[in-house]
Amino acid sequence: MNEAPVPSALTSRSVCLLALLLAFPSFGFVQKYAGLAGLAAYLAAVVAAVALIATFGHRFAPWIGRHFRLLTIFAVAGMLAGFVVLHPFEDDRGPGKSSDRNEGLELAVARMAKGKNPYYPARVFPGPLSVFPGSIILSSPFAALGNSGYQNIFWLTAFLLATSKWFKDKALALVLLAVPLAISPAAMYEFVSGGDLISNGIFVALLAMLALRAFADPAAPAWHRWGACVLLGVCLASRANFILLTPLIGATIWRIAGLRQAIAATAVVCLSSLAVSLPFYLIDPSAFTPLMSRRKLALVNDSLPWAGTAMIGMTVLMAACGAVMLLLRRKDEPIPAFFRWCTFVTLTPIVCAILFSSFVHGAPDFGFLRDRFGLMYIPFALLGWGGSWLRKPDLTPSQRTLT
Image (cartoon, rainbow, N blue to C red; front, side, top):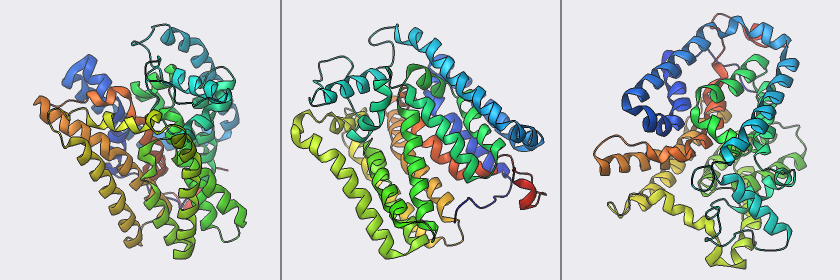
């Protein structure tokens, strides 16, 4: 299996679901500045935009396909220019007002280059580093260029090229790149501020795709499969929530390559993640600040002492359910189904945090999303549901493919 199956056109239910998934990460921003009424209007606008693209976007697909190379150059140049021009303005707002994710990664890389523990003392600004070592390693080349925020441009470009090959549709790939950025204030702010949440979701999704495709292709060399598993393990060792995708990876490989391959692949992924993370933990367990990330999931623990534990438990349960469903639902294409379940697993702790916070405050409260954590599931959602965004129901498979 070297490419995605040709999907049917988006149904009205799929349009609403995709729109909700794309809009959800920005709910915290919108509620802060426009209230619940503004949030409802924003969601309606996103649904309308997704529906319009699903209905009429195929008319522009041939033109986009013919000019794909030029449009890609403009897209990359636009992202680079936008970041270079706008990032200094955001960064100059100062501590407590601007995002500090890129500064944290750059400080960690600089300390690691000097042979120090990358997990700097909590008293140092920026605040405690919440990412696992895989994220530090993957951001190192970009930090060496002067700003870890450049990784967003690299991984967004990689996502564009990968989706154009995976879906065999260049126009669709450009839509999957441009529209989520354009309609999401959270994504735009994360990009301008140089935060790593966009990149983090993309590199995990793309390395998972690479590994699954290698196992799905009987002609793929063994080093492709196991090398992809090693790299995927490094990517999963970026944030704690991604480690819970491992059962989904094992279940999908079981579907496409058999139980023995699934056990071996899962073992390689887990060992790779441990090999990256464990040495940094053993240096100084008390200074391993990623373990503090649980506090972000326990913002309402003062009122609901069990909330943080419940969120983690629900996420583990969702991962287990997803693995079982991937094995049982044999009619579903395994790799697109894998990405859909990854979306649900990554989304679960965020939804739990919002539900608990809303319960404590007695009203809908999307404040947890102001830190833009929801952006991490967007690449999985686009790979799971976005493949039929520009499809026209009455076209044959050969007509749907842009060459």
